[in-house]
Length: 382
Ligand code: MG
Image (cartoon, rainbow, N blue to C red; front, side, top):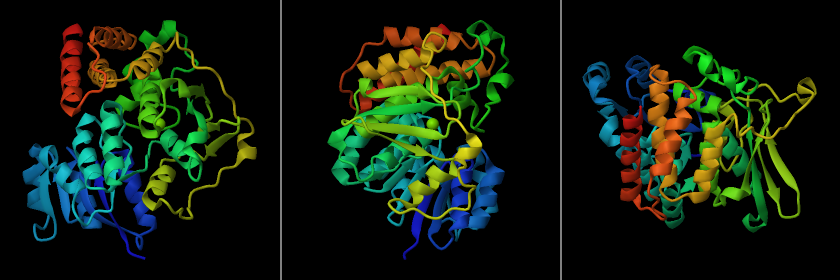
């Protein structure tokens, strides 16, 4: 069997690191041809030495440092700010793992889709901001999108071999985040550090805050809407604190299929890498008898108004998801820099969303304009 050539955009973050762990288990199946990072230079250098990619991209500030430490004959060093689309479309690349965060992932995502590659996005922003454009382009070129986000991977897996027309709705599960059992009167007394101590997953700071406010789940609703061509009312969020069921699909006959697994990102990463096959895995098996019970509850939209706002945005769609994403990014950054309180994120983001003049079927230019406009408006409010 020919080895699959993999490009990892964002190789030094948690998804990138876990992708390399999966590849370590199956060296006969995968070859790393390109890596990209931004500022984590030391780790990137270690990765380059170990995996010997043909290309590596970094930020402008780290460029000289990386260049001086790798063998130029073996690895071409390029710039993350301008060359990610080139990396994602290298003729030898089979699978692009899109593990970087932020809407800058849109450029390599779109380029890879245009080139008909298999793209495995862990990044939410690109799909939230320009999901319709990405999916339309994938349809045109035959590119395959296999999501890595655990909920989207669950839905994707549940839909394999099914007739899409028989899907009634998606039940998107949410672990509930750090604030699930905290009274909303205490939200603003929590420190940034307390918010960042997520009980289940170690993730980046931005996504951990979004998990606490359930904004992350809101983005996932929009992401699912785009990936699977659903209307907003065909997605229901279900709080499931054990996080064993990663999402479910309900068919028109009332039958519900669920995907269950222990909470380890290596599983959806591995699935995306090996799709449409599955590999046997050396992770601990799911022990349902040890877990004993799986529980479900309605999300509390009063305590988590950002989720309610995201559901509203999903319904109106158009350029609004781009506005929601940009406003939240700026507001969460202000929270992490201790400039605003946690509940202020909603105040600011909802004001910007309300003020936006909706563009119904935005093209790429209009999406980027909405993004820019929302960033400026949010900064003014903070
Ligand atoms: Mg998720």
